[in-house]
Image 1 (cartoon, rainbow, N blue to C red):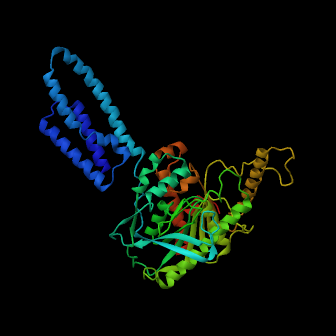
Image 2 (cartoon, rainbow, N blue to C red):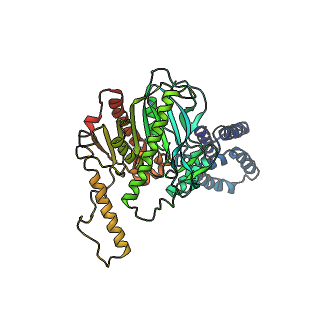
Image 3 (cartoon, rainbow, N blue to C red):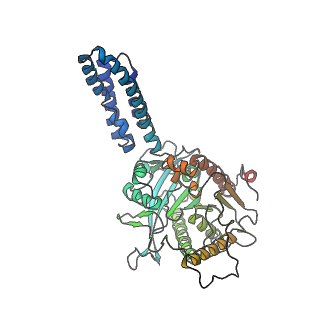
Length: 487
């Protein structure tokens, strides 16, 4: 509807400026159509600030009628020359205004995801689970509170499933504010979050095309959320996977519980100003690892006896994979190293935080590392040697820099065995850290500033993700992975 409204009003504007014959009937007709389009677009899709220039064109035919009446009343020879000058000025103004009218919704769109390419539709359902064996350690939680997790599951459904399409975020006001705090973008850039829709249908019936489906866990990045990689989740589900996204409470952007409580990112526990010791980051990652283990336990219960009868006998927990972005990618590695239930995993641009180290011989499970091609600060670091020590007269800033270099050196060392044992490490050109999430879809302005192409990257990531999981969870032949990266 936005496209129809903008196209009609811009064409009408150009016609009003350059058209020779404009009958009153056509002017009144144009006014009526434009007003109807404005009302319908706002009612169906919601009015948005980037469309204000287009909305302002709706009464343009009425203004043209008024001006035409004045011209008829004031026609004289001196006015002919002025009309010519005014005509040129009007044409230039119309061109400029039309450009702004078209550009505004293009620069600040209601973003959408590529149509899922697989044979399945997508259903989704949300869960709220409490781990009574663990106390919440966040400074924002009530004393004695237990660890609570929001988990959303996406699953294969019929292509013609009917129902409400799930929103991209569950509460636009909460997530808009959280996105603004995380990214520093003006809230005007983020107003489309509440209007973006996924392809998933709430509570759709699970497809009966297969007896059971392999299951994949998704773990978001630090200060992300369970739906931040919708571009990837939807493609996986459409090809016959059940995907469970975990929201790691107080380390995520926001968690909204069923009783409307909101748990935001704990900036007291996770201050951004200080250099975090690796030991602290490793301990934090262990919390995430325990989150995943708990969720796996819950999924096994659903697979055995789902109260809603949706997943009973339909989750193949023997074909279980995991993928994650950033800190969630590190969590994936830790799960591969510690939990036999996870058979294969993908880490998307995540430093290897966590208490366990990849052995020199490798993980001994199928593993794919996908990295951005940003300048490798770890590899190029001027980290101090192991036996060097800071001088006593070093300033606080130099000490912090020294500690940071040592941490970078340690993180780089942890990457050394990634490809051992026949695993893969893929580095994608023209990408940055956030290319492996939905973030750049919010506005093309961010893409241009970063010099990346989000949708091309997403399609490439999806090709490798599907090839990897299809091979290791469905035993299908590899199509592109062996040709793209060395083992």
